[in-house]
Length: 260
Length: 317
Image (cartoon, each protein chain N blue to C red):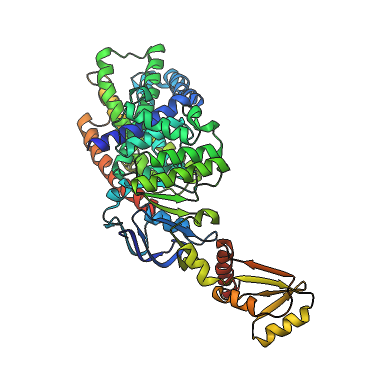
């Protein structure tokens, strides 16, 4: 067991080290959240802020924070494909550790990477005046970690069904961008036509975003206007999806690795 | 010799291929043996080694490593294997030392430590000894991105030996290495074999490396075409070549014809392929005056070319 934990930490540290050495990636990863929160949030607040009855910049800030944590971890886990194409995965897969430890290590490493991004987004939130108290921050941290881990598990199930980095580059935006809308990252989704509501409910990102908002708006007057489901409900759905994604994804991935 | 690798009727068929990449091969490798797998490109060498090292599933057959079944006990088997892959499998984003440390922790040799400074002295000594041996000690803390192909190979060798494996699989390990590093590697592997009784399983294109093996297995199109010691393979497949020349070549050919010895004429020289044991009696019995006598004993290259050449001819390629 100790050996497996050591291996998970080593795999996680590798991903974290890679991020710290990749400065362009660090800078680029902050550009979109800043654009979405500052530019999109600012313009929506000016246009619809009064009509919806809550601050659209804060609404988008909480959505973008959860979306980035979820997406960044998912995208990082998919980099196992890159390892496979560089033949580095051979070194990992011939080592005497559980296949689950490899995937856990990858998710943990990418979670650390995403949390660096999360710290940057929160710092930007402070700068533009998003109200975040110390006690609020303490409750947002576990919600952020859960969003990362959940995104990691989602990354595993996507990874398991992709053959190459090229396919991943083509498919990943297709399964991520619709979720921006369906999860209500930028716009309220309290009232949706039935078919969109069904699609929204099967979008994993919805639960990460709603969990973050549930935590952020807890006790606030806007809670009922913004939050879709109670925190416990979101946590339960995330837990079930996490286990299913991780178990099925890892099984398929490992089988595909050996059954060529 | 106690068998450490037992392969019985191993078959591998890739999903999108009609022919079997490995087609019913069987062999055993003894503990401490140096076993070489030879064959042309596409013969099935890398497929076979990938199955034996647990990175690829087999279609059918049985493989036991140290008495453990490959399908049921893959994790236990992996603990005792050292592998140098055909394609570099180092992480370009890390330094050389970080790559080795990553491997050492994955193999459970040392507990996780985030930096080199926190690693135990034993680890530091071992990595420096190995790095010195392959002359990359000065580059140990440099990023791999700056390494040449040969240096990456050296690093992989260091890494594969860190956990003192009982079997080392080397898939064309010396391609890209300079002659001195290649000689150092083989000298080190000889020491490892002698001191730790480590089994070496090699695939190579360098026949002079295979010539040092205890036993050779030549495969082509997924099937074994020769298996034995280098001497046995050379002896079984090839006769000695004798080249004779005489001032009166027609007398010589007449005498050979009378003695019912098969020969060919090449540029006014007579070329014979007698059995090894018949060379001396035949030469002694000749009465025609000779001006040239050249006896050529077959090399492994000759044997390899003859075996693979005849296979290609039979397949009508």
